[in-house]
Each structure stands twice: as structure tokens, then as C-alpha cells.
Amino acid sequence: MSRKLLKWGGATVVGLVVALVAVYVVAGATRETLGESARAALLRDGKAERFVPTSQGVVHVRVSGPEQGPVVLLLHGGVVGGQGFAAWRKPLADAGFRVVMPDLLGYGYSERPDVPYTREFSTRQLRELLDGLGVRAPAHVVGASLGGAIATAFTAENPGRVASLALMAPSGGGRTDVVAPVLGWPVIGDWIFRVAGPSQVRSMIADAYPPGPARDEMVAWMAEQTGFGGIAEGILNTVRNYDSTWQPDVYQAVGRTGIPVFAAWGTDDAVNPYAQSAQVRRWIPRLELFTLPGQGHAITYGQAAAVLERVVPFLRGAGVRA
Image 1 (cartoon, rainbow, N blue to C red):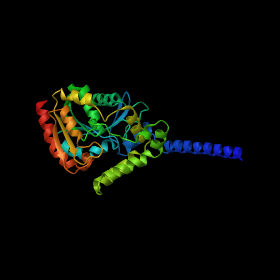
Image 2 (cartoon, helix red, strand yellow):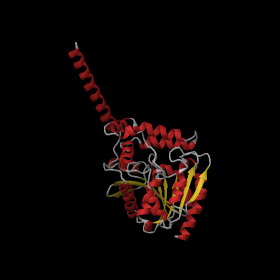
Image 3 (cartoon, helix red, strand yellow):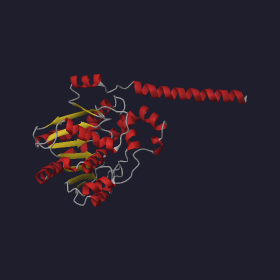
Image 4 (cartoon, rainbow, N blue to C red):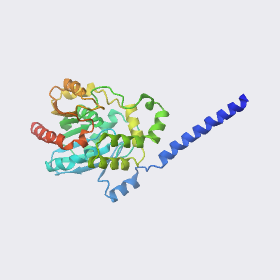
């Protein structure tokens, strides 16, 4: 009897493992790969605007505004892709800025390279993107959430290429658990992020916005970008390889540069809590802080008009000082 139970139990375990592997493989196979044919179709259909090759992968970027205007580089957070700054394009272009809005590698319509998504990976792609676009003058760099951590690191490494730095509830000012620790484990995390990750990030974004046009647009965009493979795996890759939640070295380095720095932060932010703004200000004493009472983390898209009322004058003033 015990042998039969052991055989039955063994067969059940094997069957379960085979089923889990099959689900993992099918989940990857049913999502489109962002290769040459996909990029050509996106351009043909008017969904994508421009692709710039870099040494680490092909970056999709949207560029608008006067060609000779001061460049504003918009760096999105860790889930939404460049769409997170969609409401910023026209106001900034109308204000005379040349707006550069990429999907960072691993997001949106950009390639999903199979390399570690480290801090160096993130800042290198920005240098090569600006080079590929022929941007030589110092740019105004704006970063939201994870994009704020990347923007700060880029500024610390390349102060001569940055006219000003604007941060929207940035990461880097205090350690937080981006995901549950178990999700970072090998095999378990890989399976969960590939199979369930896309639906989870769609739900997370849907829950971050109140009902309305902004939410509907963002939900539609999330469905679009998660139709391509690799976005959830890229989030896990970043969690494993880039400690973006605690960056005292780069914030302190920026504090020593004299570059103008602005930050907007909601007091009800549950991702990067508002209390972290005090830490960032200790590192960068000249920080110009704009507080949004009662607002959460999604201020870049959900509170774009209010934030832009403060950001545009800051950029203009920083341009005068640069």
C-alpha cells in the first residue's frame, strides 16, 4: 500500500511540475516578441514614432516640440512606460521645449534585452539615447518614481549633460519592499512574474487612478504594452539587480553639483512615502519641493496639470541659470 502511495505521490508531483513548466512556456509563447517585424508594424500602424539603436537594445522614443528648443528628457517609472508622461508632451512643447519621451529598455515598445537591469544599464542607455538623437547641449532631466532614481544616477554620473533635475515622487530616499521577498527567489519569482505578472501590473495601475479618462487611457496602454513579452520579467530583473530604493551616494553627489533640483510629492504616497522627501532634502539642501496634499504616488499622470504649473517655470528658470 505504501509503495502504491509513493508511486502515486511521485507521479502527482511529476505531473504538477510538467503542468507548471507547460504554463510557463505557453505564457511566454503567447506574447509577441519586440523584434524587427514588430517594430516595423508598430511604425506602420502609427503606434510607434521612432526607434533608436543602442549597444544594449533598441529604444522607442517619442520626440516633439521645436527642434532648437531646450531638451527635456522624461523618464517614466517602473511599470507604465513612456505613456506615464503622455499628458506632459503638448504643454512642454507649447512652452518651447524639445520633448524626448522614451520607453526605457524593458518597457513600452522598447526592446527587452536579456541582461541584468543594473544602475549602469539604466544610465548607459540614456547617454546612448541622447547621443543617438544628436543631443549635445545639457538637457533638463525629469524622472518619476524609479525614473527619478535613474534620473538622479544619470545626473550624478554626467553633470555636464544635465541643465536641471526634476523628480516626481522618486525612489532612492528610503528602503521599501518593491515586491514580497519570496517573489525575488529564483524559479518561483520567474514563474510568477511571467505567468501572472502582466495581469498583476495591469490591475495595479487600474487601482492607482480614480475612474475617469486618465484611468481609461492608462488601462488601455497597459493592455497594449503587456501584449508584448518581457515587461513583468523586466520588473523582476530590476528588483534583483538594481537597489533603486536607497541611493544616498548619487543624491549626495547631485547635492554637490549645484544643478537646480525640483521635486513633487504627494503626502499620501504609499510607494515612496512623503517622509522620504525630508531625507532627499538633507542630501540636496537647495531642493525646491512642491507638496501635493492628499495625493498618492500617481501624480505624474493623474496630477499632470497641477505639477506642470510648477515644473515649467522651474525649467525656464533653470535654463537661465544653466
